[in-house]
Image 1 (cartoon, rainbow, N blue to C red):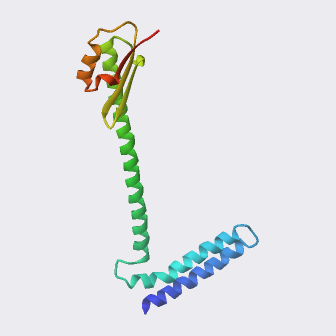
Image 2: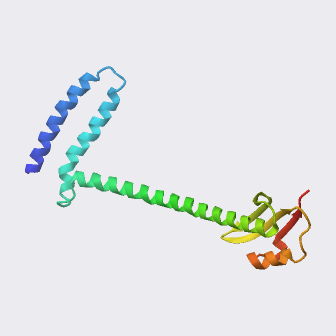
Image 3: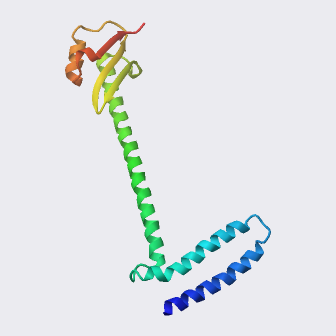
Length: 159
């Protein structure tokens, strides 16, 4: 019963304050927002004692805190997921760049003359623009070295 009396006191004081603020905003475009906020706060003040009936820890503040915590937890999970994807992407890019550097050194060309296609971490295709004809067994050596079928390695003469 005491909680209901406390609620009535809080609602009364709030409505007095809200009435004063409403008069300050009378005739402005902000009045409708003030009335909306007042209504929401009034609902929260009236609902607080009833929510506390669900248990000692079920006060309005705890419900709001739980909502904020849940929201932050979801945001954090999403941020971790995004950072994980970004990190994974950067690792694959570094891996591809490392392979390109190795292929370039192996073929004696600059790194911009090499292209590598990866799929799920496996090399699918290698293209190299070479200055001169490479030894006949170069494709076989690259196939063994990188674990790629010989049909997926292309040494193209740069003109």
